Length: 68
Image (cartoon, rainbow, N blue to C red; front, side, top):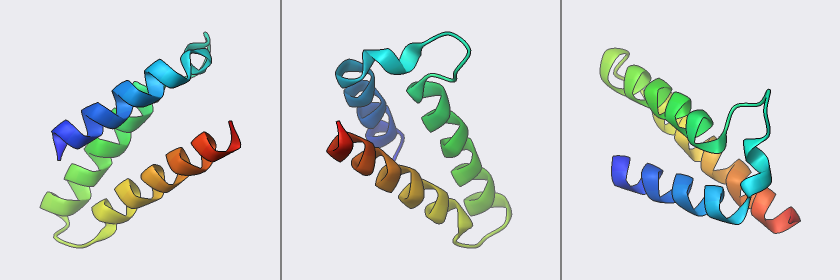
């Protein structure tokens, strides 16, 4: 799972270098924060909210790539 998240972060950072503007979170930081939420909800709450966060963020990445 972590390898997939890291691969997505690499692809996004290479294809969208303008996302790393000052004052905003970089895409890798956003993915890492959402990955931590995923781990928290999956392992500590024992329900499906963590997978919801990951699915939602992957969906937004795909929409951003389509718009570019």
